[in-house]
Each structure stands twice: as structure tokens, then as C-alpha cells.
Image 1 (cartoon, rainbow, N blue to C red):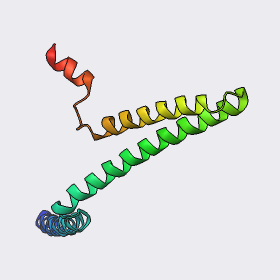
Image 2: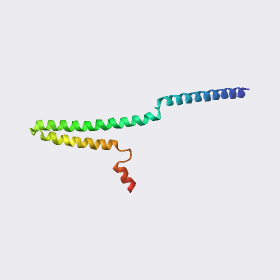
Image 3: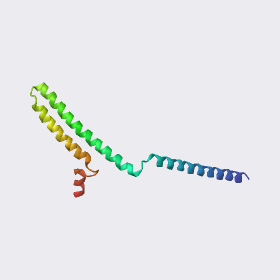
Image 4: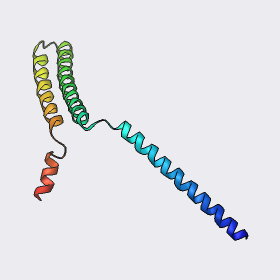
Length: 117
């Protein structure tokens, strides 16, 4: 009698747990569906992120080269030669950074060396 009652309570508890688990899965699936952007926007977002990253890398390198050249010229009195040289190096570094950022993932030289071996 007691065992039947305990089994019935256990079965009722298991049924409630299964319904609760199903409801939680449904809510999580709905939340995940709302959070992920549509597939068409993923490509655009990625392209914008890579583009903005490339532009900021280029501008940062050019500005750093220019500021360092200007300051070095001020301190050493070699105006405008260090500004021209370091600004040129900044532009070269900026182009290299853009090239590096624009490469697809896994296309670096170290990965290619591992594949050849």
C-alpha cells in the first residue's frame, strides 16, 4: 500500500519533471532563435567588422609613424627628415596590417609550413 503510493508519487514527480524540462527546452530554443541574426546579416556584419578593423589598423600605424617622426624631429632638430621617414614606415606598416587583417583565417605562413611537413 505504501509502496504503491510512493510509486505513484514518484511517477507523478517524474512526469512533472519531464514537462518542466520540455518547457525549459522550448524557451531556450525560442531565445536562441531570437538572439541569432538572420544568415544574410552574418556575412555583412563580419565584413563590416573586418573592414573597420583594417581601417583602424591602417590609420593607427600612419598616425603613430607621423607622431613619432614629428617628435623625433623636434627633439633632434632634423626637421622634416625623420617625419618623412617614419611616416613612410607607418604607411608601410599600415598596408602590412591591412594585408594581415584581410587574410582568411588559417592562411598564415606558420600554418602553411605545418602542412608542407
